[in-house]
Length: 310
Length: 310
Image (tube, rainbow over all chains, first blue to last red; front, side, top):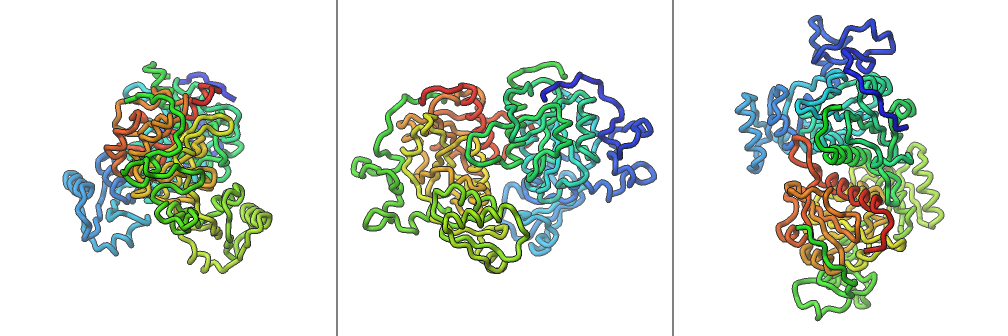
């Protein structure tokens, strides 16, 4: 199960961002920055998605000092308002949040601690809540292009992670390892809730997200787009370390916490591999397994040195 | 900073398990299963540690289905009692917990949910709390021996992790990567609290722990015992991947969440290395960084194949 797909030029429209199982030829070509698939049914008359459609991906409320600081630093998304709890001890992070908000002309409101905590949707907002424009999903194709430096695509497919903390932790690690695009299924997946965004420690602002109706179809599309998909499955006899991960565009596919990869997802991956285990416990946490795999891709890419994009 | 220490035969007593900075010659040789250093002051007249001394390491209350199941499966520690909440949906994990407890003659009490939740010290005990004998620390020397298969020691030094969730998550990952011994400082470190034990998902039962008065002294002892210590520091120019981690006994040293490695700890490590980062975020979560490093040791060990113990 370790076939490498033939390199293919990115198509303009693919099944991965198609709403159902109909004939893809009947659907319009995907345009940059257009919301993907199922969201289309809820876009307004000018093709601009309505807020309730966009908010499907989440990211509209960000809590915690590190996550809010990163949101303001990245500056890719409009921030509507920052709420700070009164009577906090001085902190360089809080100073920096106020300074950045001022520079970006984002209103900062100091509110009683009780009001902030009532507004917060995580357990420990650390006295800071930011209200931002929700994240815009992008078409799958957009994730598959090399970056400006010519580095081949490096994607993470979170195929059914349901705990927002696990998803957030994995996104943070993936971003550090060089992942730039994330594929999330519309259903049975955690969203970028305040808890997920806080755990991600600002990673969501540096990543691009595609939301897909079905992961199996998206994996077929990735293959057509020249991206090699590797599913992580603890019981596989194939060691991840023996796969050539450092060459060309790759997508790591991580299954759900309880059930791992669904049968059809597993079938559509180009390779299935395990991180060899050396302990008595049955398995790694899903976020950690994903992190170890992402860093293995990064290690192999560094070892392979600079190559032309795949 | 990548010197390898000369191999040395394990000493019978060392500074690392000495209570202070006094003359080590005045202290008795360390015996097997004796609690280490500072705990000695609180041992009873027969040299058996009193419960309050042992409980310093924690592990006396374990919560959550996976952690309790692993506690009973390992069977290395006496379990006094298992509490189950009434009115839980049937679950194979709960069945297995009851079955194992029955086999081990551990009393199982079914109690109202409110009573269980009142007893619980984690947010979500998942209807299960086990009361067990606290973990016994072991002398540092004991952690440094090859295992029965002749595999050289593989240690983790958690030098100041203060969040029990981070510590628990790191212990789980480390166990999966093949770590067998963990060094914890007595002060300014999370303990194996119910939260830590739950996050560790049963790993604490498979690991041996040494509690040390000071990490710098323990690192000197590790060097004398022939264990190579590698401190993780994100800003280091030395890539972890370029170090020969697959040969001989190693100890990975992970610093605190906020401040990383303390200056004296850093100075005493045989090597300081970073996991190369490829993203925009400033750093990985400490537990994930430790996990990635542990699995790099495991990868290099597998690649090196079977060698005689170092």
